[in-house]
Image (cartoon, rainbow, N blue to C red; front, side, top):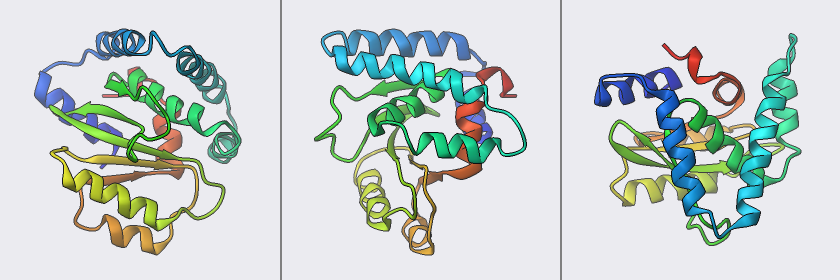
Length: 188
């Protein structure tokens, strides 16, 4: 499922496109939730700065440059960057209040009337297929509409076996770069 398809699902529920309003609502909601977490709010601010930076990358090797850059940043900032990119696309995001002990879920995004958990992993090589398997179990054991497993590494064939028949969508490579670098105004 592409992000445009996810967006169309959201639009079918609301009947209109209000990405700016949803972004503002999401940011306000999370600001209130994180008011007592200054380090967490600092990482959210860092994620916004880094989003502006990577969106400025250009040239024929843009995707490789973006992925290489993402593999070098703090893993917690990467989680916040992905959530910030989804907010920029007009999605309602619920950021976790803590990073460790989160039960394998880094945040949630509202899609088509359901909450979808998000797991973000920073890898430089092949991802651990067990991480995907555990996330698929989390998504299937609760009443989620689906899940987003986002990573900066490479996906081996074992990963796809875990995804088969699940409602978890893998976002990496060009799809990750598209999600991060495209602004909400680029959506139909």
